[in-house]
Image (cartoon, rainbow over all chains, first blue to last red; front, side, top):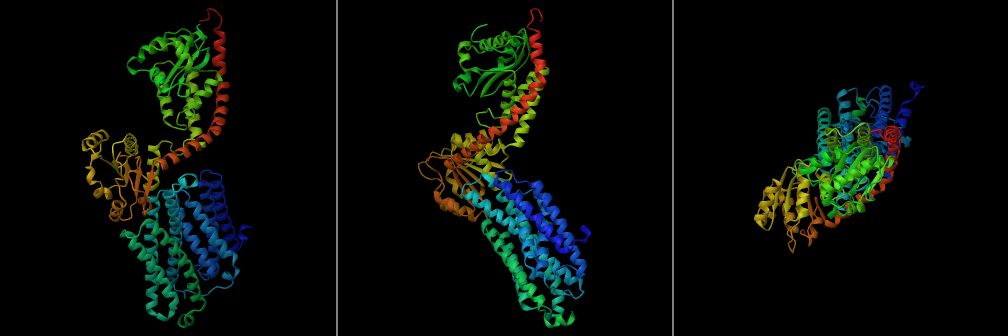
Length: 280
Length: 360
């Protein structure tokens, strides 16, 4: 029976597991208990496996990386964030990161599944059979997943700062990691995300300089702007000119902008530049 | 047997604790190390006392024993009062006694920290372990006390891991250290400045030292006093007038001077924060009147807690621990009942058998 499941069925199941993880975490926090980290981790791993299966089936069907419409972009971003969480969650043992990650993954996947229009059509031959372009797109989307996780650690940093400033350190605030740990993780995520996005832009630019009409200016401008903003934030943070709280706000705002930029990127695919259209 | 003697045989515990005994009496009852062996020698000679162990902490002196007759417990008390030169009639006013299953229940509660003055404190487990180890080395324990003590350690660990009885610190110094942990994570890279030589400040500095703070510096309006305290704490001394210019070097500043006005001004902290890049600063103001200007709390990346703030958190944590006591008691009740069922034949059976004249 499982073998007959369509890709969207697997993705629905994954979204439900993420949602259950989020609800379980909320329940345990509301009743004043410890976060159920092991149960949360298990639910996320199960959801991740289902999402991977769904994306694999979609990839097999379209003959490449499933990045052909807004639905797939959101799914891939959520999958990237979870991939990284599965590494960081164990390494850093940051309490509540699983809770927030399951929340982000549930929101991104459920929204993408709940809007059928996002998956009603998809651009075909998007990458022109060029694996480098596909690599460029996958790398860029993976960096968005990293920025998604960064937004979560930034949100936790804001909450920790709020709790310390307002002298409310009991209850579920006590399960938040220290300011220093959150700041450290956030900076590392930002470095990693900027490296991935820079790599993606370098790969993309090699293709773009050969045919400057292959990409619409709005997409180019949006992508470069996102990269530039994150790079400036990183430079300011490393120079000590961006305090932890402002850095956290910046990471949250930039991730919102990054998500919005997906719309512009997808629009570019729906209305490809003439040269690109001719090629595909 | 005198009326002042504890009416106890089989498994029993008698003693005086913080619950019934004021500190000035506990001081008199506390066993002095140099002569304690004389007391043990006297107790070891008591006929009919099969096993015993003594728990002596700053909050309690308790004698656990397994005796064939009530006379053995009475003689044990007599030996103790004689050793302490404390009137037995006076001791009887403060004494609490538990026998049989109640004694088991009591030891489990003590070991789990729910009978402690600071509910949920974990030091008591180590103290009970030490008392048991000392009794074992004197060969004064047997099958009953061995089992009861060992099971009490397991119960204490279970209570700790399955309830929130030990969560949240309840002393001012430990609350301050816990808050620093919320800011800096591990404290092994944290530099602490102690301003003033007040008692509570010193305790807080010691708490930071015990949690592995990287460096400790003492600064007092009297340099001699600062030097003396620095030597005692294994710290460095800093002239008081240099505090503002060196502020940026420290992550945690503990203030406990008796200065009439603030000694840390908003401008000082602003200047320090410019030189600290994005590293936070934690100010703990334990002084009355306050040592740190209130405006400092509004600065970004600066966290200011005064005595009231810390006391409020300590009180909240204490209340949270109190709320866990019922849960702990339920666990302990079940374990104590099961344990008593297991040891009762050994305790009561043999005790009853030896009631027969000439049996021992």
